[in-house]
Image 1 (cartoon, helix red, strand yellow):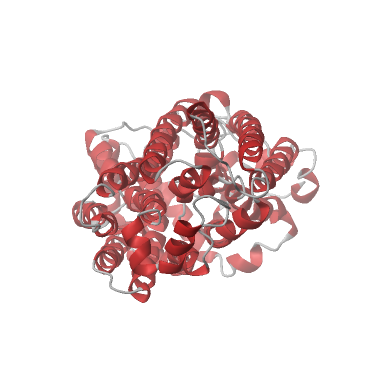
Image 2 (cartoon, one colour):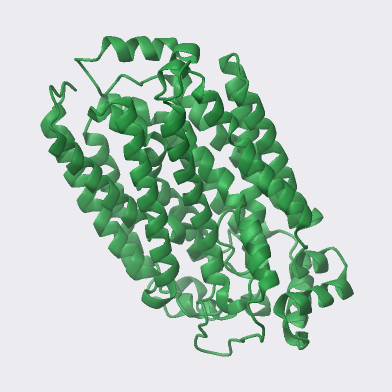
Length: 521
């Protein structure tokens, strides 16, 4: 997305318009779509540490956990079925994101949000009343379909409704709602785990119906975006809607660009084949490597399994859930830092600073766990100061991610794709992200069992790799309008050889669709 209030070099345009109350309210309602994704990330790790839940569905895991109290802590949760419970959602979201791009484009953003909310609600209902493992897996897959649809349509909706100057902040606002969802889930897990009778896990899983209802009901009252209306031939209605959204009558220039962008996008017959052309090499590289690296920071390991991780380090069930709440608060606070700083300090600075911070923390945590647990996983008694040090460095690590690779891993790919390949490139971006989210979630507990404290060093290696990649290959995109973005590649020391002397159709403009934040078409 263009910088907030920023105009870059060249002939970049700046459309008139205000941040109206109408737009503010609609964007807040739409952003609640991020709550369902965040709630799910937070809830699944907490539920898998609840003893009644393990006794009912994963008895072998519970028995191993009980038997291994004094021995190897690394392997107590190693179960393919348990990891399938967590990671099945991301496989479903991967499949749904491919379908959702077509639904969002052909039927509008609102309908896609509504569908996402309904699917998520159905999944939460099945999980809340689950009697067997297959019900849990089916429920998780429905949740995944819901996440796929919501994450495709919500960021796209936000970026189309937002005035040019505020698009950056509003897109990271979607990421903020994800982190709020994670925090709410962690707090609820903490209290539900205390319920007598051992049915608190049903409230945790079934509680996902609440954020699902918010986005479902909210989507019924949201207006459609002018971009979506133009795409579906409602041109005059779109002009009126644009006037209301911007709070002014003079919207002719922006409206003409929206129509031109829509007409140009209809002429692109083979966006997937276009992606393979030499001139799109930098875009394709970023569409694959940025989401790939984002998942290999190790953040999902911390967020999915924070309670399991803290429990394994030696905290009790209660303390481990509390520790997860603390990391959730840090996540929200650090995302606010990103909203403030992304257009002041630039993307590259945040990427490199966050990478350095994560690397140092991973090395310290690996050393702490290695010193106490060794290679046999037997910690003996853990002093309180030790536990505090581990949680402190995990929190510094989470903050480093939450103001760098977290929001920027979605922001940067979405702002660099030119019009004629944007839909296809963003689908690849979403798919790669979900694929590696699934893969990391699926193998993490097995890796913890075999690599032990070396798991943190495994992710630290990738943090070094991704920081080197950013330093040498990612140009700064702060303050550059989307229609000028091809100049960034032309002046880059490496990518210029691929794009030199080439111009993108329509200047690479796709006004109103730029900077779609997270998982969009």
